[in-house]
Image (tube, rainbow, N blue to C red; front, side, top):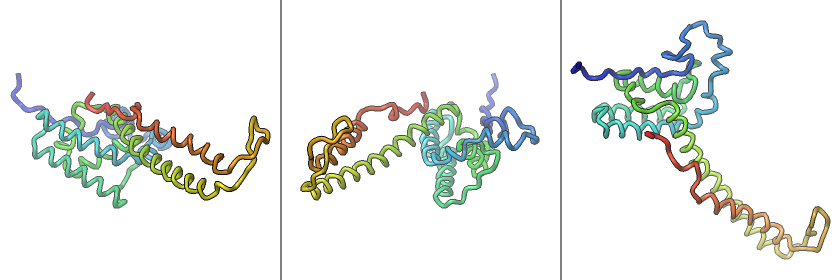
Length: 212
């Protein structure tokens, strides 16, 4: 058995057309490249992709797959990329099919393929997609809940302010007895409340598949 240390895996796992992908012919039709690209959509998950990669870098250190110095290089490179996203200085290329391939290319450019290529040891692209999606949905859920809470707060205040106003009640889309406008308004806010309350129950968004 060889005593040589394992070589770093290729940093170019790529998709179909990126370096290391199934199709590497430079004559690939640009229309097909555009058709296969999802980065125009999934780049909104850049933060979650970097957070997941930083967490995985720490796990690789625990498993002794990378050294402390290599882990620090990985984290430093990932944090540099996050700063570039915030500053708006990213440079996406046509061959960057998705957020993962862009981050792979940029990370190896920053710290080299020998260390950057180790980041994806033990995890697949499917792991990344599932983890990023769940992290992103959980974060966006908080944004929606914040707006929902604001709507309920304003609605309750308006119901109190307009409680003297009467309006026509309806039953089966037909005019019925008069009701207070505040009553009608709170009937809709009640639906908001149950949506808000239900969001704190365990949901499929929460479990993170990384390292499974």
